Amino acid sequence: MHLRTRSSLAMIGLLALAAACAPAGGVSAPATSSHSAPAFVVAPGTTATTTATTTATTKAPQPRPPCSGETAACVSLSAELAWLMKDGQVVFGPVPVKSGKPESPTPQGTFRVQWKDQEHFSSEFAQLPMPNSVFFAGGGIAFHGGSLDAGSHGCVHLSDADSLRFFEFLGVGAVVQVAA
Image (spheres, helix red, strand yellow):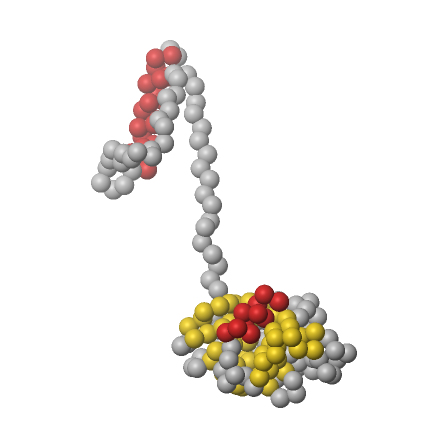
């Protein structure tokens, strides 16, 4: 087969491919832009190959807090997540938490912040530091900075940075909801 015939067949094949991929109204001219990609030319008797790569840029949807109403801090024990909320809307979170061990579970229910201490030390557990403590339930149960790997004695552990955010956001009397 002659070189000219092969080139003509290649051109016909490209036109057929373009027509098959065109929108229902037919083939339209490409949009022009100051940022358009450079055109390329395929020499007769050669083949051009292109590879398209797409990257997903959408984030997975964030879990919704299981709390409602006037809640200022919401904890999901099953998801091990917490949120700060204002007027029913999430303003911070979700953030990871670690709650009580099976033998000393974090109490579930609706509570109010009772008091706060930014540099608290446990009087029950060998003077362990409890930075950014926000006490919300009887028995010394609080949000505070602590391990996210080991269960607590009933408190809700947050990273140090997240515990500071909770400490600054939650005032005495703020509503805390702890859900299963």
